[in-house]
Structures are given as structure tokens and as C-alpha cells.
Length: 179
Image (cartoon, rainbow, N blue to C red; front, top):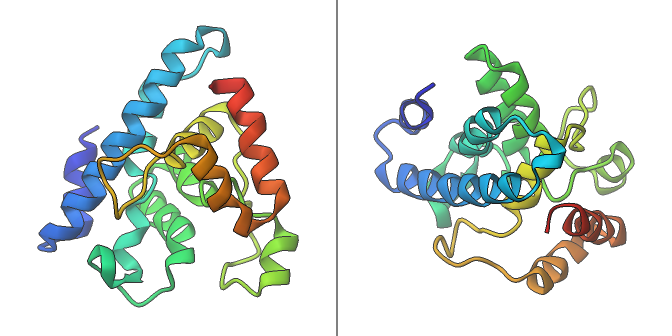
């Protein structure tokens, strides 16, 4: 599968967005593959990890985030399920689950309702498979505003604190499993 061509298809003529999306995706993919290689005992599907990590943020093309050249109409928090819808339309159901479930360390239904987030409640927004967890974890190390900088775990935990203690605890659990 040509993941770069798929990213280009949905970015269209927005070259700045394509650059941000493709660099971020490559960084996350490289981190995920590096971690997968360190843990052969987890028997991760590395080909799938590579594809899904490259496509996990495709939904940002439909979001409004001018600082990263996203000119869509939806709030950024929606990029996971919007990306899942895009990937499903491309026949990539398993990849869609990664996109849908990678925000923060996952979002519980209770958290979505309590925060009044504009997310459909007929979906699961928490990573389930080891591959979903791996990509979600790797994603936390890279932002779209400082593309070439890898975050330290302490900075990630501080950033995740806004999602609540459970989010930080999930990251710490994943660090023990994958770090």
C-alpha cells in the first residue's frame, strides 16, 4: 500500500499540510517500528503497524487548526473518527480503528460525555489491540508543531495530565510494556 499517495490524495493541493502530516506520520511510524523490533515477544504485525502509523492522523485534513495548516470545518478533537471514516471509505477497516482510537491515550465514553466532546458515542475511542496501543504510544512522542523533536516521557506525562490521571497511568503502563 502506498500510504504517502493516500496522504497526498486527502491533502490535495495543501502542500504545507502534507509536509506536516507526512513528517509527523513518518516519525511516529519509525518510533513504532523501533519499539516493535525491541519486543519480538509481542508478535506485532509490523507491516500493519507501518501502514496504520503512517495513516493514523489522516483525519486532520477535515479539521480546523490553522497553526498546522488544517483548513477544515471540524474541531481538532474529531480528527480520529474523521480519519477512521476516510480509511473505511478506502476499505481499510483495521487501519480505521487505529485512527479512531489514538487520541490522548484513548478516550472513555464517560470522559467524552463529561467533557461534552463532539464525538459520536457509537464508537470505541480507546486502543484495544497491541498494534493500536503501540501506535498510540509512539504518537505521544511527536507533535505537529515541533516536527523534528522527540518529547521526553516526563513532558508527555505533563501534557497528558489535562486528560486526567487515568491517561497518565495508561501511558506509564505502556511505557513499562514498550519502553
